[in-house]
Length: 311
Figure 1 (cartoon, one colour):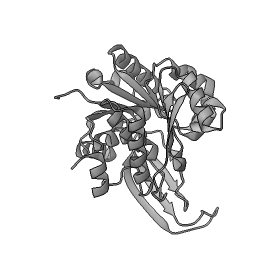
Figure 2: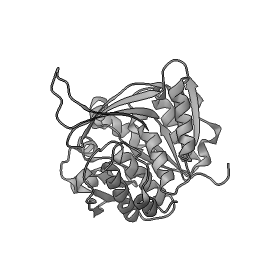
Figure 3: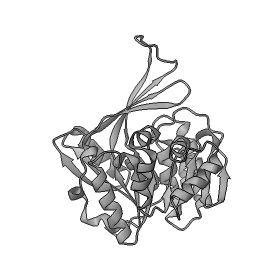
């Protein structure tokens, strides 16, 4: 490998089974829609979007010894993402069912695939090749893979790297207990945290975005808080100083992976010295473009290639 990576994401690679319907589902009923299979997984999505936005990016995870695992390797290679993938025969490569309703909102059922079996022994010796390590809550709610994620964080921090976290699921934070989740993550010395509104609400008990952001900053001292507000844009800052970034005018079609695109785009700029406010403005534009299309990783069109500065 040549230059050090800008971003290394650790966690889940999963295949998304996307189900789009034009009308609400009726219990026991039938309806027509569109069903697609697309690559996903929150941590893998972040690595892919960081790479698409010009960063040198990598991914660490676990896959099944199956055809979906082979396709995962192929997909990351095609995206230009360096990857370290251990294998297991105990579980298949992860698959997530994603139902996107007629308003563009998504609901997910996540199968606990091979990515949930990542252990500290699976961590590659090259873990410190990146200047920044990104984790998601999906790697912390159960053990494994919790010990692997925390070991990776300790190694990265010990090597002087920066860390970021996407809390990932307000429901699982509620099940874990917000105070317990904060105890587990606040000591990691995070440089950036990427909660969405619902995760911020559960973690802080606040409902007004600025109060929520200030409380998150108090819970995670020293971290940049990038609070994703969906159709309302984002708030970014630390302490008592936050900047509001308005949303793009893109119509909402599918929210799948928009938060991952935001994090990947933000880190692609921030790890290269751009201010948090400028990085967040760039990330809002990228995630707004994603929301207007289907799937977590729609192919880049000419507009987004120009915006990301890639050919």
